[in-house]
Image 1 (cartoon, rainbow, N blue to C red):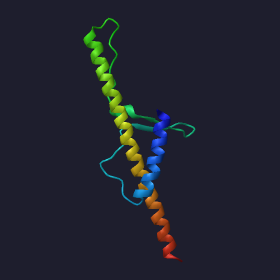
Image 2: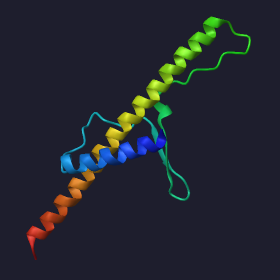
Image 3: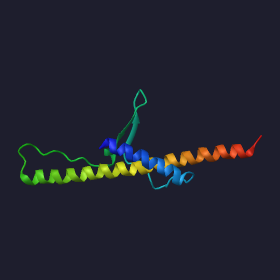
Image 4: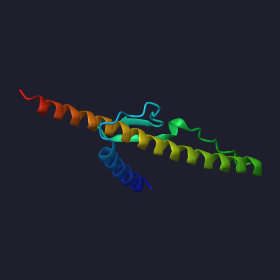
Length: 114
């Protein structure tokens, strides 16, 4: 699934750069998850910051506790998926804005001459 998300993100970002280059990022978007870099500058991502992970019931818990855990687990998975999609949108907007700014800055420099 992560491979599919990466391919989706790459295609989405490439399409967004072409379609919306130069447009400002939507101000109400913000990262839902946590982005971090390691010592070797590898980017990692954790979408769970925006979601509440359910606690597993004790081994002797009744059926209601296990049913609640399953329902809460499904909501948690839905939440992290939604957070990931929102963060792809956020990253796409930020990349598009940066790309558009770099292009317009360069073109302004070229047109300005010496």
